[in-house]
Length: 305
Image 1 (cartoon, helix red, strand yellow):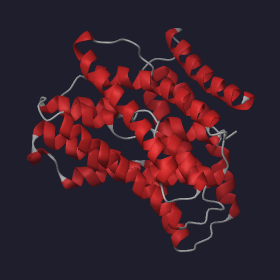
Image 2 (image 1 turned 180 degrees about the vertical axis):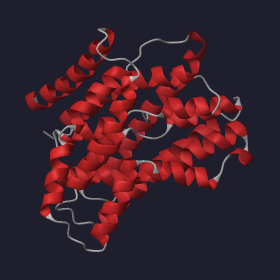
Image 3 (image 1 turned 120 degrees about the horizontal axis):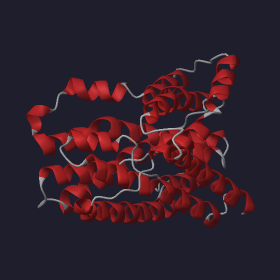
Image 4 (image 1 turned 90 degrees about the vertical axis):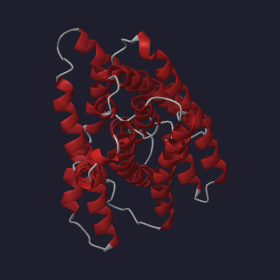
């Protein structure tokens, strides 16, 4: 337990350090663009590549990918049902911020510190389904509701999906593994070296992005999304751990992953759908540290340390 708490404290310390450095003037909100590009386009894809070194794809991983899709679809369905009387922009806000998981910037670095490559591969496979949703289908649904069907183009969906380097890395590595192609060891060695920076950069970035200011006029919607994510995560976690037809390790890892925070680019998507971007930014900031705490509690409860 001491190891888990020490590592969890380390994550929170790095987040706090990023926030303190921003408040001290060393970093600004503008620096998030550079750090986000470094993490999403270099270090995170390298983590994904390195985790495929000894990975043997099997039917269990198909369950993980399907679950990444299914959890998103279920939440979107729940949101559409619960918000049917709200304004289009509000419904889009609920869809974008109520569904989807920030695997790359939060969950992946966190899980890396506690699990070996096989468990991280499970996270990666779940994120394949998750990425298809959050970078394409979810945003499309939100745009259709907010601005009408005529404003959504298939070309834009494909472009958004394949502009995500983690998603591209998943597609390439899964294809290579499926075809039985063996990459030289030096490729995985170099990827592992670059991927080691992912955890620190991601936590510092989260700290810089943390913004505690709250607009009173959007408090109700923020509170509703906050409660929705927690309730749904608890239900998913329980069902996955007890009833998912998969090996124990898959059930353990995935029951933690569903507590991942909101997607980091949710504020951008929220603004494009006509809702207040600051509401999504603040909600995102509040969910990040809470998710780390909840995932740490689950690690201890499941004795995965």
